[in-house]
Image 1 (cartoon, rainbow, N blue to C red):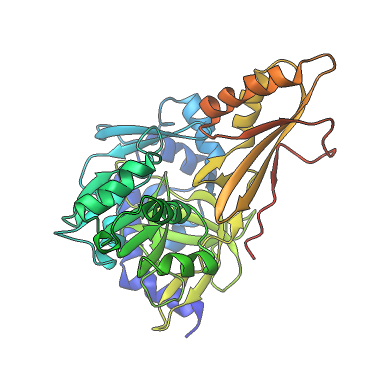
Image 2: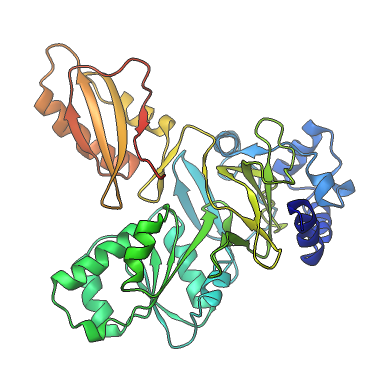
Length: 405
């Protein structure tokens, strides 16, 4: 079977033409969507298939940020009467509404596939402040009937004690953070027989084979999933070792850069997502992630995972580092002639270093001391700040030195 045939089968099996027609018919009056359709010359009520939807240009993430500035707080993209129970903030800043309803981001699918359910205790090590990841994964775990320990990031001594005391059976978080917890558990000399954590859902970072093998020595089942703060769960590993299964409740496309035309073979392109909810019709949203199609052992359509990024932002420690936000933070610091942020990787953990060139006559030590807290507060990253004499011309604000090969 070809990828093109598998793609046709996926659309038919999941009724996506019908779902798109229903979405566009019910959401035609939402101002943000109506304006986009008018600009593109598309009648939303006439869009009755995925192919017809693909006539609408891709909406880049940066464009959503601009729309929210022009028409706060959500860019006119929410239907009238939409029930928003929480609001989150991602780099940009971009504000993400959490809509009412159990597991509105659909992460319960991957927890259920992982075998998590009633009787399980899930340690959720994503952040619960401002960014949506913690709430997303918690809602998914609760949807299966499991209980959740909201660990967040940090307090590792308390977290490993809880793993032993509560009999934690599953983990959700960064793969690098799971490695750190395994090491901290052993350093604390907690009883190995009380380590019951045997399943892990990891996301927001690459999972190279070397790290997967290392984690597998203590956690027999480690599965990677893929989603975004704007769209929720998009795809996940099912354990057969072949790409990512597409999630239900959302339309995922791989589209050509520049044109937005859907790709129907193995060529790499941007992941473009339509959330099938008329109260928040996020339609043809460009994630900025690169991926491509492949076939599973059963001939089903799969994503190959995240293969890179299309824009200038990079993901560090599970969060995006955006040049525009860097410029805002660093522009408020006096005495800086030049700067850049260097992203690295050491022992399966991302590192971040801020290199600054002081202006003539500026006290370098005082400048470094001033920048550290500003980076932490403004960007939500901890970075090692160092003063340097010069920077390579044209290097840009972010230098990513990680080599995932």
